[in-house]
Length: 319
Image 1 (cartoon, rainbow, N blue to C red):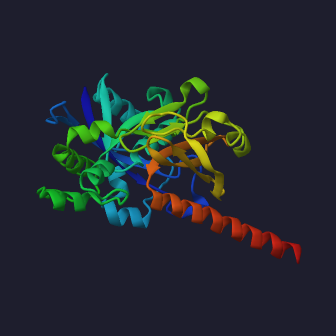
Image 2 (tube, helix red, strand yellow):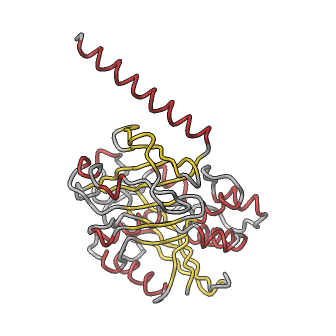
């Protein structure tokens, strides 16, 4: 298997959000990648500039960071050609590695814009080296910059950051230092291409929590009436955990619950409702064992939210 460590640079509307293309808010302008074998040895590199088709100038903030002129991009190749060459270069058997969780999604969004998403079927599994670095260094959920990681690991800085190939090279160097048992335990899944049918739903079990991604629903209300979505099982033994706090709404798209497993204790549930480009909805549920202190904090949170809503209802009655 090839390990493909890649990085993207992208542009956005130079005129601000008002003039942004809703189908392509971020247009890829550079792809850089390093190919590693399973021993994490570099075997090849890939670098291409992409000729813009959507935004005809570089946003000032982007230009300050990546130091690429528009005239350089005009000499690049169209995105469909670059994306096709990149995927062919990846080979038949590969895994993606990135610094952070945006690049895989933006690659798919750009491919969808050009009608080529069929070349990268989803949901796409990948490895988030930024998150893995945090796990190994005990810094999760805090996310560190790539430059911070290179400093901590004593990696020599030979090229400027914020160019696609340079960032891919630095990410590959960080990957060399990671414990592969940690890497294998924590794969990530990008759900830009979210499950459409029940048989496509995703169930992932990590050392410290379980994650589930539902199929698509036409509205949020139907999501919270689905038994699989609202079920609570212990992430250790995967047996049903008895609900102690029903699912309560934290905000418009987040629900939380508290359950108890007789063998492994408290289980915190969290459901995040995601909105698709096609106006559908799906749920991402996480179940995690917590201690008594965290359980009590969740009880107090639910009670605080209940009181706030009660005060709001009473004030509305007097209007």
